[in-house]
Every structure is written in structure tokens, then in C-alpha cells.
Image: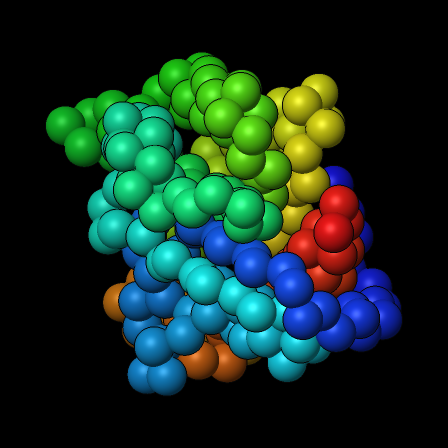
Length: 214
């Protein structure tokens, strides 16, 4: 896990062509943000302001689980790859996995963890450096208990794979801007200010990751 902190501006690059695909759920898509940027858009904008030419693909889909992401990641990333580019993959999911339907989780925790493990192994084999943002809390105590447990297990998977992981759960659970935004929204998605808080948590690790292996 990479903790939030301070960071330095990245050097300007005139030759680098960065391509980043983000796969996940509606929080990746930025649902609820009237600015239509979400947290991923804010991260990408920060890189652009630092002079790195960037093409970003936000492929978050509402109600997507880890199993849905696993089923589509190769097709989605393959269609967006280009020779000679610095290609990256961002993953974030888990809340929908923990939602109950018909008396059981949509995706059982062991399967969710296995899906992340397979995704990271596949990304490594495909030559795609990966970056994982953990699932955030919503206005549902039962789902949040599952998400907290998944967060701890995701950290272990990412550490084993040598992949950056940003734990946002505890910080956002204690953040009134996030919790109020979710509560006053649809119970799962914040507004622009909430997405800004999530982006700030991920920003130091994100900029470090983007600045690596130039």
C-alpha cells in the first residue's frame, strides 16, 4: 500500500506517448460527478498538466464486478494498444462484488481475490504495468464490511505481484465530504467533491507510478 503524501512535479516530456486504460465499475466511470471527471479524470489531468502527452480510456461500467472486468479486459485493452507507446492499466472494483442479490454476494470474496490475481498476472504477461485503487465505502454497512475485508486481501495480492495499491477505504470512511456526498446522492456515488477526495488519496502513488520506467 502506498500512503498519501507529498509529491514533486514530473519532468516535461516531448517524446513520451502515454496510454492508460482504466477498467472497473461506476465509481471508475465517475457516476454522480456533474463535472464528468470522476477520480480517474482528475488523475489524468494532473499528468497532462505536468507535460506528459496522455491518451486516457475510462472504461468503467455500472454494476460491473471483478468477474465482469476479468471477462473483458483483454478485449478492451487489446483494442487500444499501439506500438511504441507507454501503455498502462488501472483497475478498481469490489463494491458490486459485495452487494447481495438473492441472499448471496454477487461475487464471493474468494472469487473476487482470485479474479484480481488473474488480472494482475495477465497484465504482467501482456506487458501492461498495473495500478490498483481499492474499493471505497458506500452507504451500506453490510457491503462496507465486505469491502473492508477485500481491501486487506487486495493489498496482499498487489504486494505479492509488485503492483501499487491505494487503500482508500478507511480514509474515505472517515471523510465527511465523501460520506455526506454518498449519503445525499444515491447511496453509492459521491459528487464532484467526493471524487476529488478520492483522487487526492491516489495522487502521490499515481504520479510516482506514471513517473517510473520513463
